[in-house]
Length: 203
Image (cartoon, rainbow, N blue to C red; front, side, top):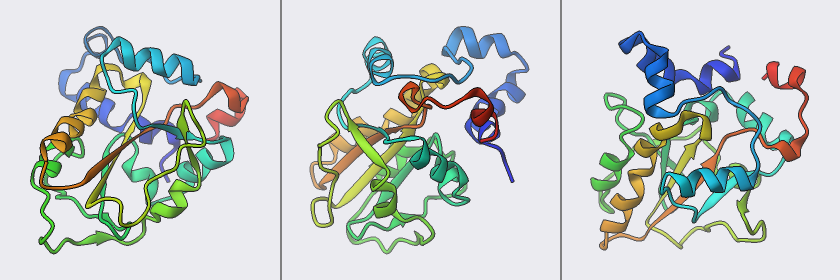
């Protein structure tokens, strides 16, 4: 079974293998080693790079975070985009395309298309584990409020490579024919969880 570190660095390592130069990743893309963050540090990061601060969510505590890490199905979608239908079913995306092709998928969404689903993903269970920033009382989307829901799972430590994930937002805004909601779910460890280094290493 893959460790959390291997899952989080999946796309970064792919690029590293292609270029063979880790310094390019750090200098050009702003990629750093993962570390504990806060709502404030993440918000500053988003504003610095002109990324959206709206619809910003985090896991509510370390227990919720670990559930994601240990879920063999959900962890496959860390640092990628999930597209959900009105019945809270995750649409199975084209495996031939990069997992960061969310903008393409959003551009081609249609109400009358018969989609295949990843039935192992429980969106309502995921929603029970996350909260909005800065207002934790913000209500999450419910059935019937949207035609499609886009969930981007992003992290500060992948720097400018988050741009590929956030491409879904302008794509969703252009789709005036559909009600598309977007959630940007951060997957960095939070300082407020007070997780020890030894516990983090075991993830």
